[in-house]
Amino acid sequence: MKTKQLYPKFLVLGLVLLISCRKDSLLIESEQPKSTVAELVKSTNGDGTLSSPTRVLEADNSLISADGQTKIQIKIWSDYGESQGSNSTYWMGHESVVVDPDFVLVGGGARVTDLNNANSNVNALLYAAYPVNDNTFSTFSADSKDHIPGYNYKHNLWVYAIGMKVFYFDNSLGDFVAVPSSTLKGYMNISTVSNSSPSSAPSSFAYAPSGYTVLSGGAKLTWTPWTYGRMLCSTGILNTGSNNSFGKGKDHVYADPGYIETYSLSMQNINPHNTAKPLFTSDVILDVISQTTNSVTHTTGVNVGYLLAGVGASTTWVGSWGRLLYAAYPQNGTTGVASSKDHVYSDIGGTLTVCVTGIKPY
Image 1 (cartoon, helix red, strand yellow):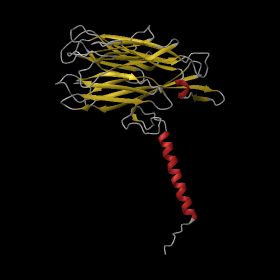
Image 2: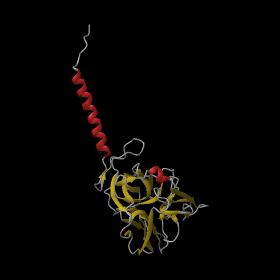
Image 3: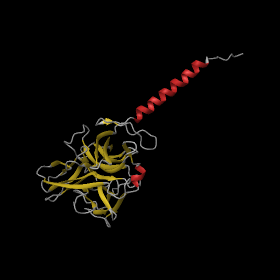
Image 4: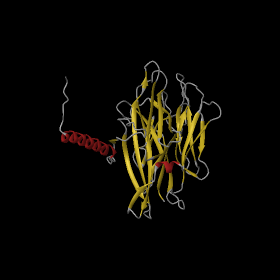
């Protein structure tokens, strides 16, 4: 006959308390805010699953309004992955980055690097960089590919998501209280527009609804493997006076007409806690430089006292082959970067435009 092993009650109680305390300590650790720039973020994607182990917090900046009643916090996350494919076809990259659940997406960007994460010897290009229009206002995605046989190289694709969090000052508590992201999403909009007929250089504008302010944008070229496809030439806000985003792409060397989808991410500029006043003041800066080498990179910053909300880029050319974008992304909380290059055939000339959108609490 088997005998039951009896354990003292205090020992069982001790084990229960130990397991409970250990569980609580793990939860507290995982929920601790990360303040170190470029530190791995251990947050969730909003569905309880851990985010990518390569997801990195790139920047964390905040500004308080002049009356001390509103605070806006901007965080920027990045993630990257290696292209997939084969030497006999194409190497393609696809990545998405999700902001933390208590933030809303206001912008993003992407860049292509070699496998050492350097900008030199990059032979792949962007064909999509856009805010995902799924009503969650949480995700920025991008796609890349090499182009033309003989130039099919492995590469890394980096994607960036810019998130915003809003606080109001609670006088009874003597501290700032966060506005729920679900509330902010009620003031946000993503518009998507496509060109009406196939083109070797498709382009389209995406306008914000009346009463909304465009914070950023993006573009996505539809592409059917294994055709040659088209690559991005313009994406994002590129005009300081218009409430829209612009997208343009082109085929290269080999004709392959098709479509482009342009995205504008905008927000109704109303303070959720005090609807009698605006939430933010926005400022758009365009910086245009001449392209005098085969590959050009340029950086532009927002004005002092503003936080970076969006990055746009556009490349033009004067030769017959054209130039293409392989980077348009936030470098940190205040600057944006764009990179363009000719490909296979030299085409030195034209301009590179870098556009940054800055916001600060009203």
